Length: 149
Image (cartoon, rainbow, N blue to C red; front, side, top):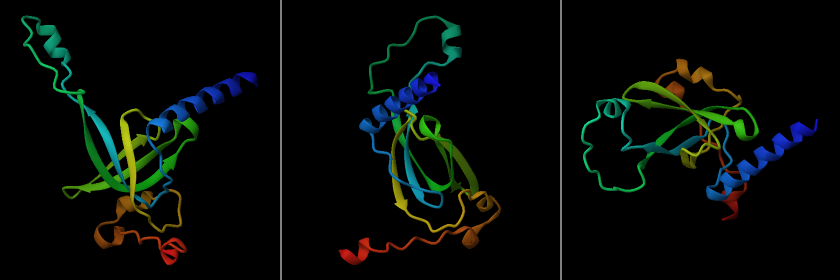
């Protein structure tokens, strides 16, 4: 039993380290989120290493990654603790694209909730079969926050 608490303690410390670097907002399935993902660039391919020969001089052009926005509807959240992940679905050039992001991944730079959706299920896999207006999710109305301002 003691080993389980050691693992839980380690996971808690890892989660705290990541949450100090970036904020993890509260979001649920049905919400539209914008995930900023670090895309690593400028890394040599294995083919380039095999060829050998003179290597071209490359000056340092920055951090070696760029940020790419991935905006879509959260259709599922799964896991718990450090292993928690969420699935985001978007339509790209008329084709549905889904991507699973680990919540505490170092490749996820930031998560921003764009719109809150009103849904009655935890998993929205049924959206895969819907197109156009039928695939829309109604926006959740703020109950007290908007009235107080």
